[in-house]
Amino acid sequence: MNPAGRDCQAGGGGLSEGVTGGAKGLWAGIVAFGIWGVLPVYWKQLEFMGATSLVAQRTCWTLLALWPLLLLRRKGISADRQVIAWHFLSGALIAGNWLLYVWATLNDRMIEGALGYYINPFFNMLFGALWFGERHSRLQLAAIATAFSGVLLQMPGVGHFPWVALALGSSFSLYGVVRKRSPLGALDGLAVETTVLAPFALAWLFMAHSSVPQAFGESWPHALLIAGTGLVTAVPLLLFAFASRNIRLSTLGMLQFIGPTMQFFIGWKIYGEPMTTLRLLSFGLIWLAIALYGWDSLRRRPLPK
Image (cartoon, rainbow, N blue to C red):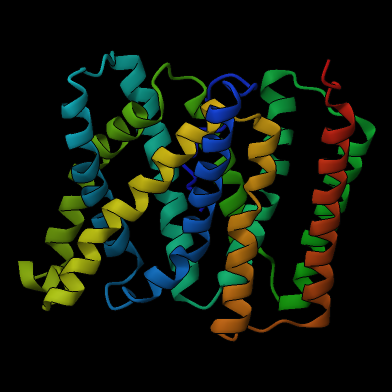
């Protein structure tokens, strides 16, 4: 989930900033991806709202959670029209990703959503080659082909084309591509994105609900859960931003699989989503592709002096 709005591609340097910073960065990454892994359980508690209203609320409350941090920092955001335009596009991409992710969770397609975030790194590799001239080794190309084979097996495994997984994986990668065009960091970038999206989110909430109490579930427990969407969105994103500045990007890439793995088992074991033999074989190929990619990254890492 992976929203990530996860500015992995826009993060800081690839090397850690010392042993202490590296350890803190590692734990920050683990906690961030762990939160994203269990978020489907949180969204399930809000299924009374519907996916579109939930994403609209999430946008507004995330904005409210971010602006106090910006005020405490006492530093303004410098963004010209071009930067705002890039963030309007990136905001539209991440909002679409959020909407599809929440819809999949509420409609018992959590495992297919997990597949989308498993294959997201391979979309990153593909788009990196297309737009940024990045080259891939033979083993990485083999990993991409293996992952693609796993995706193809989803069709007979679930009985339909896995459009949810492909849309989630590709939209999040495209979000990363657009974020690379902006000079803003994770906090500032997310603040601009939610600011430009907030008017649309508020307009939807006013149109979809006849009263303010109805928009908040007409009970205090529901209202508190809705208000909490801002924190559960902002906290892992900020932890992720810290991790991306303090650990290797290759390490961060491996940590990324914590989230969809937890989502996979939650959908399967807790919510009883179907797991056929073909579907399990499909995920087996995806995990093999991840192992190939991880092995290639490790063997290419320079030895310490």
